[in-house]
Picture 1 (cartoon, helix red, strand yellow):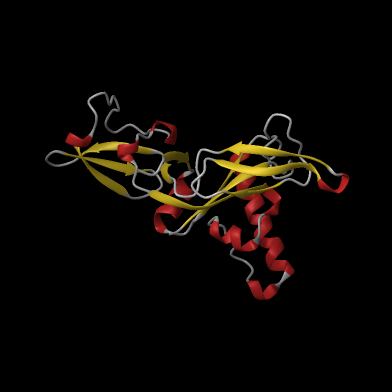
Picture 2: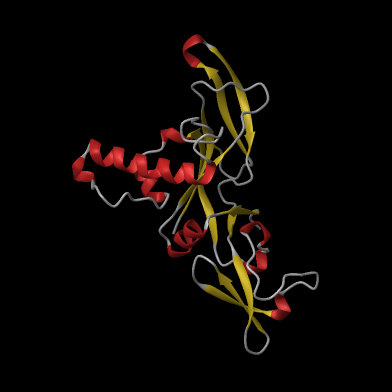
Length: 210
């Protein structure tokens, strides 16, 4: 059975994944102990929990072999945690209402006895149990890179579109897409934090099919 692991998403991004408009996500990671931050790159190894990367300055021949352990690997199943509330439904069913839109009916018999969630109360995504989840995706690609290494095609897969330019506009379109993703990134991580766009942190990139 594939390993399953939750990832937390904002209301908007959770809905985009459910709709098939988002097929990629970036998560900030820390360098391994002793790892450096220059010119690092990595490659995912299929069905492995680890990513191996060269850490250091390649130009100065000053680097080492680092190993990252990530929560998701190729073949793992990501399940989406999002904000929700429970609403009583007819018969023996509970209605899970997602704050980003949509709902899911759950048979009360499938809910564990230890569940203490209350009806008609909004819960943040961190409290979503697996049985309430509506979206699961199998991971098809994993890599590590700097957040500013993102391409316009990956920005599209992240579910971001600036809505004002198109690919025929060349550099202007690229800059517009980058600015739109930068705004989204900073709205989640903070513009002045160590995880901000300007700080250019290392990220794990997870991709999946619609």
